[in-house]
Image (cartoon, rainbow, N blue to C red; front, side, top):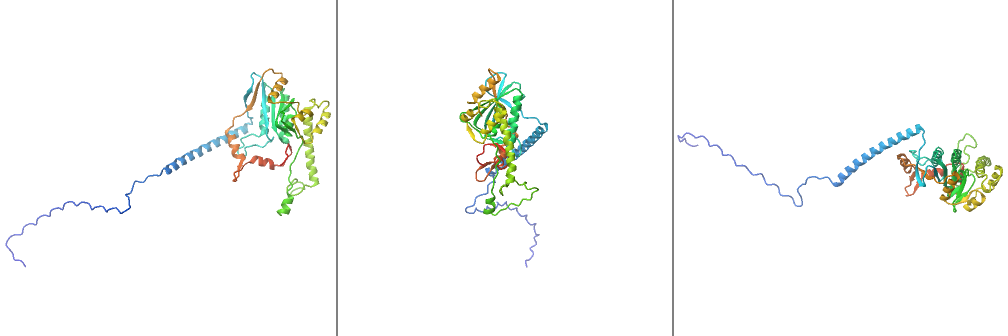
Length: 383
């Protein structure tokens, strides 16, 4: 205990403020670590973004074009107008024209484009071109450049009928045979005023064929497979590959073959009557044609000798003959051409070819062509 001193206590002194303290030092970095960097997008990220945008825009534009195709195709089908072909000059000049129409490949009404239906069939194309030539007053002659093994009975007959319409319109028709002018190819050629065969042409094969397959032994004896059809009549599955053909069925089919064959002989007899070896009445010519029409093929020299062709020569010889028959000293020789449309491009290669994963590309329309049973004016040594 302290004693009082008699001195009044003084006021306490104010506390002086503390000086500002420096921030604590940062912890030293650990060994092997780096300070964080700002995050950057990889170049591949931006490439993927750009590609995605391009893909979306391309898809939208294709959908718009596809819609336009369907609108145009629908309009064309409703209008029913035929396609018009432009002319490509081959040679010559003047107002009068000689038109070359190519009949190449298997004569068929089957269209190449199967989903979009953009392309016309061979039969449609040739029919349209023949009608255009028949309706053009400046066309004085038509040359059919034929390179075909033939085809279906109906398609061949349709083209043959159009050839005769061209003649009825006052135009001359000359045929030039290429590598092959057989069966249906000769059928469409027979009405012509003159037939020129290339020196290396194969022609003839006048006749009809219906290909069927009998795989019953393989299916039943080897694989144990039996077909059990439910049918409305005894002949409904006539020509089935799963059983042998009966005599009655063969007789029915043979009757159809004979009828189509008689028509073929008549077409040739009427077309060739008065040419080369075929003089006299048509009945006499018909008998002479039957001797040649056993399905065999002929060389160009044999055809010129037996009357199926009038002369040997090349395309320029056929052009010269067409001018002479039409009484023309000069003329413009043209081919009909038509630019590919978008519908053609969509319907042609994209839909008619089937890519097998073995790397083999198969034309789907040719698979269907071989699988469809029908009467044919066609040289077809194998299936």
